[in-house]
Length: 429
Image 1 (spheres, rainbow, N blue to C red):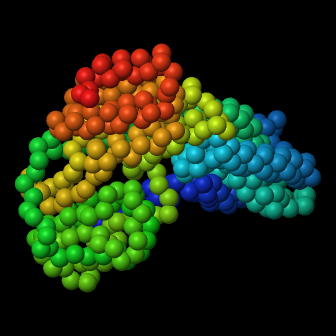
Image 2 (cartoon, helix red, strand yellow):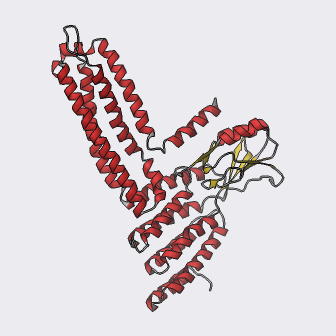
């Protein structure tokens, strides 16, 4: 049962990143509510309200149909406009910042909930309108259902106003950077909270049995609890070979097991690897570094030429690197103080290089950006780190920055600034 619920949780987590997830759920509930109200109407709720609060009940079939028709057509227009605005937002974000931002913007729950509210109300009003019959002596117009349709439409109008406000905020680069930072910080904080600070005693895996991926996709997440249960049941240990966030091709090595596993167990293990065609910051903090790096590079391109955005993005990168310095390069999962699974994480040295290499290439000619990068190194060297080697890595990258800046900048005053940065960082020539 635990295995089943873990799989359902991972499935729902993946579906939540799809733009159609919440609208589909809301539409289904709108359909159910419509039939629930039709049943309640048959119990005489409108007749009761007409006797006690007549001003709230529409008691004419033609009037009810006209009201519902207006609500449906108006809501369809609002929904089309809202979807168009989402497409404009995605197109502008991809053009001005980075296409990598699209999955995060698409998975914005506020937009999905608003679109779902529109869709649920439209479906509700359609089914209520279909249920209205021609006036007769014994027929009671479903006034209560029409009243709820009117209230739902008013709520949709309020949601539309909020949608305009929210989407105008979502496209601003400061808010995009802040969202990326908050999601990645939450993920890193979660990993740090569940991490063992000391290096765990884990056996050498060279002679272990190797198993391969049965499909392709980005390694987004895995069900750790299920894998731990399998290891405990089969009395084995595992090593997860790929780093989370990379694209896994079908047939490449995925994990190793100390004990040989039967075919059925291997299938159970593979099911617990979440491979998808997209990436999300909420499940892979490394993606945040990639996205912020691409924003910096795009901002410094001749077509955009926005050094202010690059400076702001470097501030977020600095704080994220400070958090990453508190994390080990390896992760261990255990039950009852026994380590059963070893997972790989991207090395701090590799992460720092992948982030700073493109920034150096596109920003080395700008002395203001170089100074900001110097402040980044100075701040990180003063922060707590789990390994002394991290400070050595910072010195190596700082030297690379200084070398590139000296080769690209010719103004004597700017060169003196570079020497000042080198002196502040105490770099040996």
